[in-house]
Image 1: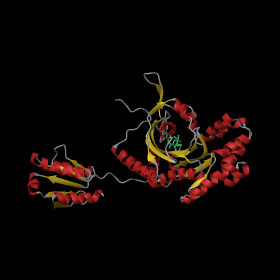
Image 2: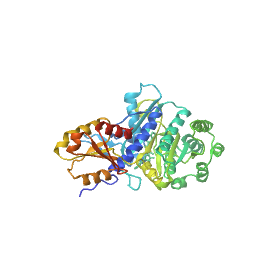
Image 3: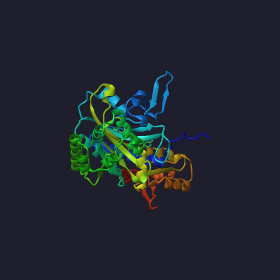
Image 4: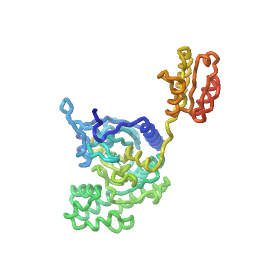
Length: 412
Ligand code: HAM
């Protein structure tokens, strides 16, 4: 038997039902904030990802040479592709430009619970405004996506990379080493770089400091004021200090971030608990454009796991009407009824396996249909249908128009 490749999943009809509901919620929330959907290719030139994403992405790329010898990679994320698309096709559009996307990404990581080699992201990018209010809009949208999904048990952490950078420069840390320190912090292991620096205990204190502590320890009024402005604006969205923590150890794993960054975590997920990450970044110079950009991506699969742990369930699939024709003579009438129902957007299906009434009804019940209609030649002649309410077991008789009207009530 040929197995699935490691780190991939088959998504069953039940999985897809839940995923589609969640996707609809995210899509609606983004649209509600004035964002519009885009999509970029599944594979790109490898260089797009190796230039600025940093080692955490580059080490995990699914990269190969195509038949013409081009270096190609499956996309590990969308942001670099969206910036390429912006530079090629969208730079003349009025600002702010608000974009969202949804699709699979590929990273050659060690698979474990919540970490896959093929996983989906739902993300956004906001191009144009370089203001604290734009950072707040970015965070508020991510927060609203999570709240609207029904998830309650998650933590939002907000930081400003400028503060940490100023601190490290004050300590005379060289440019390249600043990133190394970020990566170590991101991996939760600052000890691995501790030996070379004499300020590790102080850094540890800074990483757990509150706003006041940061102001005392770092001379960077500009970044501090910017961050404070973002927090004040979040308050206007109804997102107050109880909804987040300011946490300088939130540094992000990718190298293109600069100002305000944030992450969301669901503790219930254990090791792979990060369900969303994003912030202010700089990628325009890859394409010779100078544009402010802020965004985030929600780990779609992980958030679904968190929703499950939080006991949030979306409504089950409830198809509306199952038609059971008995004998060839009833086929034209039954198909006409089927076409009418489907034409009205009602979820209707027809028995295809030529089973007897008992077995066909048992199937309709297992598939969670609300109604079944048994259509014999007598029903066709008289134009009166026997309709079974599958929830109550009650049988009703009605003509075709009455049936359509009854079923339409459930679709709205
Ligand atoms: P990221 O933090 O690399 O950011 O990924 C975003 C989210 O994708 C993570 O928080 C996590 O939930 C999910 N994720 C990442 N890797 C995996 C995996 N192997 N299996 C399952 N889920 C995973 C970005 O990708 C940025 N492009 C976000 C962004 C958009 N920043 C600005 N705009």
